[in-house]
Length: 146
Image (spheres, one colour):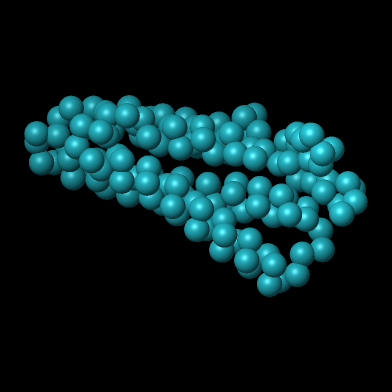
C-alpha cells in the first residue's frame, strides 16, 4: 500500500508518524467538539459526585441515574464518531471505500463505543464507585486512541 493512500484528509484529526512511515489518526485535544464534550463530562462528574454523597436520599439517586443515561447517549455518540473516523483511517484512509467496507467499519466502531461507554456507565452506577470521574476519564481515553 502506498504511503499517499494512507494520507488522511480530515482536518479534525491530527496525524502522527509511526516507525514504518505510515500515519495514524488521533483525536486532537484542540477540536471544539472535544473541548465541549470534555467540559460536559467534567460537569456531569462533579454533579454526579454531589449526588453520590447525597445518595442516601431517593430523589438525588434517581436524578443521578437519569443524568447518567443522558450522558451515556451523548458520549456514546461522540465516541462512536471518533472511533469510526479512526478505524476508517487505520485501514485505507477516507478515499475509495466500498459501501460494505464502510458498514463493516461503522459496526466495528459502534461495537467499540458501546462496550467502552457501557463499562463507564456501569462504573458510574455502582454505589461509592461512582465517585470516580468515569465520564471524564472516558473522554480523555478517547483522546489517546490511535
